[in-house]
Image 1 (tube, helix red, strand yellow):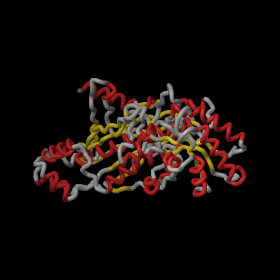
Image 2 (tube, rainbow, N blue to C red; image 1 turned 90 degrees about the vertical axis):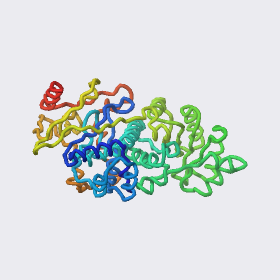
Image 3 (cartoon, rainbow, N blue to C red; image 1 turned 120 degrees about the horizontal axis):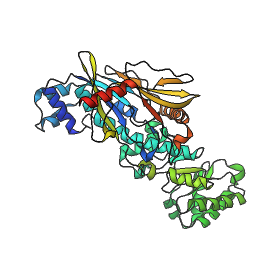
Image 4 (tube, one colour; image 1 turned 120 degrees about the vertical axis):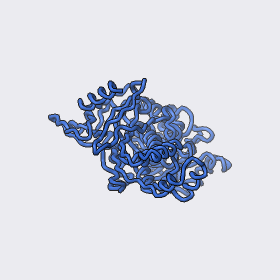
Length: 454
């Protein structure tokens, strides 16, 4: 799908101004970064690169796009003719999808003629601000739930179609095992999962009949929802049906689900009942507006829950719904030289770090220890006992995609490796440690010079 007009109109207004000033061929460097992780977390998860790549590969203005812009009466024919043949011709560097990243470090670097870089801003930000948000939430839930099965149930609470689909994708990258979103399963090859509905039970004269009918259809993967009416009666009916099927001896994959009430109290009651009935293999699935904070409390209190279905608080990141990535000019080229640029704010946290940079992560005993930001042409410092890697990969070169896209399962595995490299104190929900991001002396001095000069 060509979505080149998915940009803020100011980008086209500025593009026209650059064009009229004959500045449209000026090579610039923009950085994408965020200032603060959601939920006061220590880290975030980089997610959404594949959708950005697809957007850039299809970036062009159709004839109908040009006609629409012409009818705004804001642009002359010369500029519209220029747009009609415009393709991305620049370079893009990016961290890999699934990487754990930290505030105020460049996630992506876009080097391109000013108009090309400018017209990508909105799509890049809307993609990262959504998918990084959901992937970070999913990762935090995964760290708390540990070995528990995690099911993404959020589609019906998502803020639109693309949020449901890309949210399911981001949740899978963050560590979830399956999604209830069928189209996401088809589009991204995510395992899909669905269980019994309350309406199924209501359609029958009684709950027991509903359970029996369901079990006749889904003999190899039975999950009974027991709280349509009363969970105590529901578990008795479920046990009766499971015993009729000789479940303990003949079935490997069967469960009950609870979707309301005091999940700690109910899950303990149900587990006791199942065990007394000899149904020790029966799993308990819990849903009901869950997030990492609720799951942490449940597991600390030894709730015997085997799987969690998580919907609205994941797909909207309800506890912290804004990611806040920004897109800032940091340099431009003049006479074959890279000239640093700074944006100064009365709020010191919004003053940018100028120049084209590289982001290096240092490891000790396979654990991430700190990151260092260097200028693009600085030598990387060696520290005894540490290894390092450049987190930036070259994605586009002269407008051509040179990066091989990994499949979603590989991205999920890459994220697991990345998050496993972090110290456990960085992954705490409350008062996590602060990861060290250092700035080279050269960059520090450069920022100081530009602040004094401006």
